[in-house]
Image 1 (cartoon, rainbow, N blue to C red):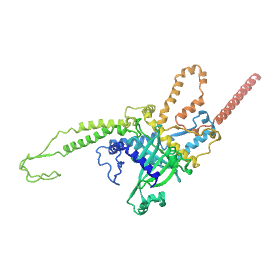
Image 2: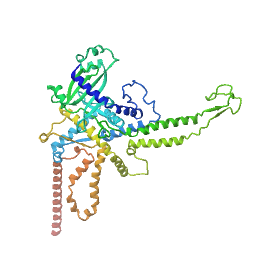
Image 3: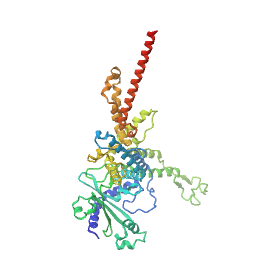
Image 4: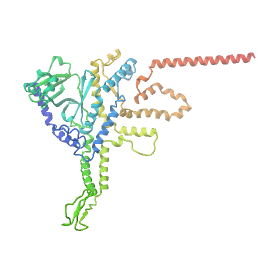
Length: 527
């Protein structure tokens, strides 16, 4: 038993006791929206049926559709969804700096697409939409540079700092003794675990705790010379006897914990599923009642005259029933209104779809539209999602990109920074160029084009008005708003050389034409 381990388990027990209400709420959410993650209380049976409690799957489809939309709009694998910048527009135009930023961005995207990022980020979106909070861990990987681990939020306990940023997490998981020995070394195991190495059935709980090293208790007890450069402490502790299996650290916070929306006095987030939970409950009950009504119409109950039958009633096809009276058997007509139940359920389904922004994500059917009208309507709908998804840039994408960039920089996977960049503080900003980010910026390019179009009549009468516009900067600015890669642009020196050569060619052509005219004039005079 270790003092460090006892302190960590004590901190974990405190966080665990403070999260009881959230767990009961999440248990309701998983029943109706994400039934495959029904292990809130750790009593799941492997291989059991997950959807046997549902009569209508509208909620499941809504979660899957919104998660797929987020994946496409924020982290599309076929498009670059971010770019790097120094934060200084003048420095960004430096050729060496621009080349370094472009190559670094391309390399990071390549590493992300070659890792398990795309599969894990989809799980993050599913948890985010359902539980309101999700978690992804970014670790070093010898084969693919980085590796991502999306963990269900009910196995994660988090803590905020004074700025409202999550800087600590406690992850609980269960492993067999054999797996623990391979990961942490058999010499670090207790005698109880060593005796269970050959038993695959029994599992033991482990807590992985990560928190800042600048805490007072950390400086006193957890300081290590080899970990001085680690800003965050990392401990793997066995729950049974508080044994510290591994002590290590991270130079930056190794995870991203995004929230969908959050109240000021709460740590965990709230989701669209929580908003539509009453409708989800009602929809299941309405579908159950409607199904029972439809069954009564298709296979109605029978009324039989007392002592009017020779044998029990047979209702299977082709069955024979012997009766004493021709009206001994007759169906009971209940008059159930299945159409009314369907109308009421469709109204509830529409409210659920609205809570999950389905009407913004899908283009409604209507009259024939031009390509420009379709694009404008799509951009308007996506622009409405901007405030909702803005939090994901700060809590999901920014810490994820910073962590991947730091890992790749330490491993030498990025190009060498230019000297002019080394003289600065070395901080880089992230420019988001995903589909939703480009839609949010498209209004700027439309304003530029609209302004030039409005003054077109004036330009026809006085072309010198265009002298007020720097055409090269306007073109590059609009192209950057639309996410056009910088690699297709020529360097400014090359553009100047092309223009100089074109100017010289035009001058030579003008001189040749003038000489030809002079020769023709002399010939006419001589004649």
